[in-house]
Image (cartoon, rainbow, N blue to C red; front, side, top):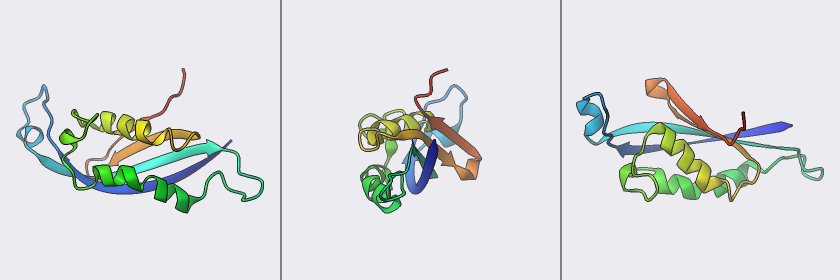
Length: 122
């Protein structure tokens, strides 16, 4: 099985309610996010590709517009914008567009954090 990866970036703000009292989290603050989309499948015999990388970028431009330079708490379906919920939100948005979607990974590189979501069965 092949896996094709494509990344995009966005900048957004959020605020979180946490058990640990952290003024930085409870105030509106921003992050730079990097998202990796992984598609699995077999290359098309005619094109030699699982999917065209430029078409992939075009298709996920809508989700990028929803997230980029926005307050994530205000986005419907993402009122608690943890990195876990962001990865699941992106999955739900992209799965209908990409039937071969295997995994979504959201990175906050400046904090050395990431979270992935997939529908793997253990």
